[in-house]
Length: 135
Image (cartoon, rainbow, N blue to C red; front, side, top):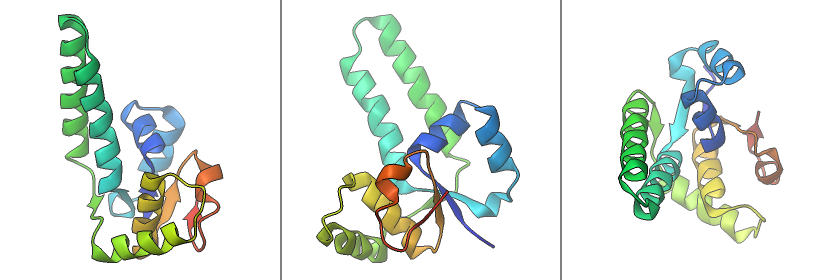
């Protein structure tokens, strides 16, 4: 069994029911699909920022509805820990001084520790990571 780890951009498209993304995800067994807890952090942080910036009750209510919908969506996801091994791998990647965002390096480190493939539209940043398989 191969493990496909959805990057935050792909997870967002899946949540929004993008036809091509949904077709590709459902073509695989649920046991083959996962996300990193770092992706969960990115998703929730985005909604927390929306809550802090909300002006007016309509916008605040909208942000809370989207946060709740995201939490409900994520409860069905297989979430991979950013554990000690992944943190160690992340620190190794960080020492390489790759021009890749912190959270992308953390997702990559998680994928490398699980021998998984990162599924992303952000190929430019992930392709510089040694040993990482991307799709």
